[in-house]
Length: 383
Image (cartoon, one colour):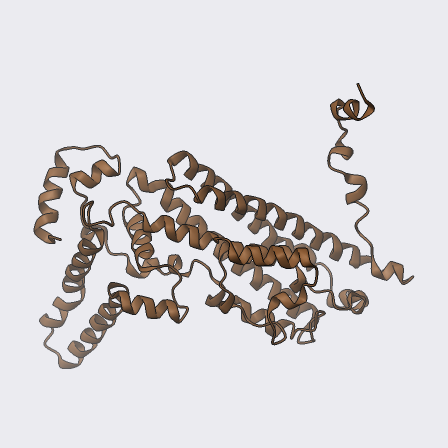
């Protein structure tokens, strides 16, 4: 047996396995190199290195989820893998949000002691964070320009640029989720034709909840107020009923999902109690959690920067606080449609009952009540 083979079979010690000798030598303080070490620079370096390590894990989980989504049919076993890995990403993001508390034990004056030695180094240059944004599905035209230029301009290494370009050109999580939602069972007319039944149910709800009080009101002023409320509700639903209005909302950046994918997401949310929709609904919830936690991370970053440097120019030459503050708007939410789904939910009593055929499709138990539901559904709204 060669020496190389014996080394492979030899059990590794803890430090060797984790490559700790190399890892723990990666904290080089610029203040110490200049002969005037600043205690808190060590914390600053450790915290940011920890961020990058967790970013690497997020990318590892994210890439595996995207790969699973590429299969033509997503079975329940695969869905569990997706949910488990997305749950892991949310827990990591929660940790990263809280990690700012440790960094904030450093005072602004402590930071000022070594900040000038950072030169042009800036968190904006985090390649992994840009990869995460792209792979989740942040649109290029949604980004706020950095120093009036494209964010990729800060990266010079050809390998880094290639990775960024690949993250843009390959299907994002948003794109893959959109395709998956478009295949939601029950959207097709031959299956259940959810969308027509849903529109019918909404119209009944608007009539009962909003329009009848208008007709029954005798006071002209109150009647006018009630009518305005009814019209406001109706107009809101019209933005999703009309495919052209939905498309225009997408062009304005107010929506991200295609009209059919939005229908799928809404159907899953309304019928979340059906066994086949349990995991899909959990998946949609996790996507909202990830988007929400990314926003919280950005917000905490903004607050920390304002606390540390006020309105000073950022180390990378950006406007610092003012630039970062612009990144916490809705334009940076990838799954914005899922945040707004609650706008279009209706009370359970108005949700169109599933037909026997649809119950079978969703693998639910068939009983006598389903027959009554089918008859009731056909009377209330016949597609």
